[in-house]
Every structure is written in structure tokens, then in C-alpha cells.
Image (tube, rainbow, N blue to C red; front, top):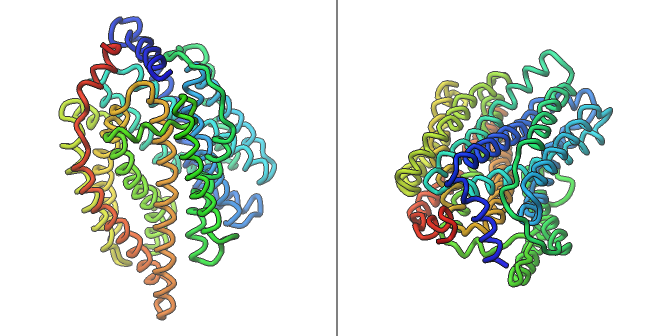
Length: 496
């Protein structure tokens, strides 16, 4: 079955290299998917700035409002592992329509929500659509784009992944200054529907589906495994502050046991090519090393994203608007550098980019450990820009070399694995940074320090942990292998 499916995928993607007609078709397909992914990624962060207004209007507590983000992340973690199965069993257009229909429906529900319960339901439906889009985009790129051009196209994906979340809070703030919070969803809805309509008309099927029964037990185990881990990790910060509804170790243990059973189940099923998430991706050294590095970088990125606004507002005393603007230059630069890094990757490969980039990321995190209550705001911008440049030189090579190490029949499973690891690493990074922030703050407060100094100490502890972890990332970059020319040739030339 593997060999058969590999032939199908490669045969359908070979015209990308051979004919101008197919080249134009492929450009249109990828452009539409990039636009749709930008919309769904923008939505992921646009809600954050609205939480204070939502708490006021809906009369809910912060711990309740936080579920609008936590439930979104939980849903992503549960749905993403299923996307590898969906993309192998359904046509490209069908998967695209499913993703954007779910996202549009969720946006419409949120736009008319009279209260918290329906708004939460809308966010969960949105997240289900969002979870499908990124793996679909990455699998399509790997299928259609020849190896020598993949870095450039993956660079464009980096723009979407960096710029959309960066500008989300700013756009949300502008909308909230003039309109009710529901307009955040009302204004996104026509854009989502337009992307759905254009995709339904223009997205072509670029892979040939294979038929296999879905394993319900695998879906249940993956939901408990990834959902349990993300939920448990998200509770660590609340637990340190004494406000968690349950002990974090309960969902984490459930998640670990379920994950072990899920892995065992996949190893059994992949013998007959029926796995929900094919774990043979990890037998490829290039993919396995890239996944480990990506997890470290994602944990660092998410932890920094959550920590910097807390530091700039509670320690430096800046307003939420100014605090949000401080990270925009770095985030935009990270996105805009994507194509440049992609072209460099196509020329020199992964290691010459990853080694210096990991050193820059580590140096930036060590500089964050010197932040105090007297640090000038412009120093924070410089530090964040340096970190963003380092991350820009990490993500595109990692995505490209990791997926490029796989044979075509494993692209969809590799994309789904990357998406799942992103969610888990993001939750882990957020949990670690917030837990250390809270612990450091409590310790200094007990010693009699005022609130600002106590919070600054917590920030120092959190960034110190990130800086120490980043040293391991530097070591790992030396183990990233060069792309396999034989595998690249197979991918590009139809298996000759």
C-alpha cells in the first residue's frame, strides 16, 4: 500500500515540474491555501486583546474567559493528529472545503453568540477548521514543489505563521476601540467565506486518495493523549498560583498513559498501512532531529510571547497598547525574512543556517535574563528583534529539511506530526514560563519585596530556564543531516 500511494502522490505532483499549465495551477492552489491559512492564524490571536471586554460584557471571571484560548488550543491538539488520515483518504479540495467550512461556521456562531457558552462553542468549531489548514498547506507544498524550490515556498509559509499572529492583537485593538467585540468575528466572516468560495472553485486535487477504514480507538486515544497533555500543562501556571480547578498531574498522567497506548496502537496498525498517525516518520533521522529542535524553539517562542506583555505592563508599567506594539517590529521582521531564509536554504542547506541561528536565539534569551524594573523599553525591542531574527533562521530550515527527509507517502503524516508537536511544545513553553514566573514571584513576595520587584524576579527565573534550554538546542543543530540527494531526486522526478 505504501509503494502504491507513493506512486500516486508523486505522479500527481510530477507535472509541477513538467508543464507551464500545471505550474500555474500549483501556484494558484498554494496561493489560495496561504491566504486561507493567514485568515485562520490571524483569528488565533485576535481574541486575546478582547478578553477584558468579554469579561466585562459577559460578566465572567478571568479563569472562565481563559477557556476561549485554552479550548481553542485543546481542540487543535485533538484534531491535528487526525489530519494525516484525512489528507490520505480525501481529495485536496474536499479537505480544504471541510477546513474552511468549519472555520466559517465557527466564526458565524461566535459573531451571533449571546453569551459565553455559545461563544466558546464557536471558538471550538473555528479551531477544528484551523487545525486542518496548516498540515494541508504543508503537505500540498511538499507534494507540488520540487526540492530545489521548497525553501522559498516554506519561507512564504513562515510569513503567514509569524505575521498573522503578530498583527492579530493590533487589528483586534483597532476594532475594539470603535466597535463591539462581536465585530471581531463579523469582519472576519466575509473574508473566510470568500476564501471558502474561491477555494471551492479553484483548488485542484493534487493527490490520489487511498481507501482504509478509520480506527476509532486511535482517535479516542489521541484525544485523551494530546488533549490531556495540553490541558495538564496549561494548568501548571494556575496551580502555582493556587487557582487550578484540578491538580495538573491528573490530566498529564492520563495524557502520558493514553499517549503510550496511542503509540502502541499506531505501531500495530502501520504494519497494514492503517495508522491514524504513521510513526515511521521518526525512523528518518532528518525528521526526528528537526522535530526535537522545533519543539524547543516553539516552547521558547510561546513562552516569550506570554511573558513579555506581563513584564512590560506589570514591571515597566506600560499600557497594553504600547506593550503590544513593542513586539510588532520583531514579529513582522521574522515573517518578512521567511522568503530570504528560504532562498538561502535552497542554496546552502540547513546546517549553515541553523547553527548560527541557534546561537543568536540563545544569546537573546540570556540577554532577557538581565531585564529589570529599570530596563528602558527600547532595549526590550532590540532584544525581541534579535530573538525574532534567530527564530526566522530556524523555522524555515526546520520545516523544509524535516519534511524533505520523508518519502512522499509520509508527507501528510509528517505535517500532522509537526502541527501536533507545535501545540504540545507551545503549551509546555507557556506552562514552564508561567509556573516559574509565579514561583519566583511568590518567593520574593514572601521575603517582603514589593509587587514590581517580585514580578521582575519571576520574569528572571522564567527567562533563565529558557536560556538554559536553548543551550541544548545549539548542540542539537550540529546533528541536523544534509538533505538526502537520492530522496530529493525521487521526490522531484517521479521515483526514477
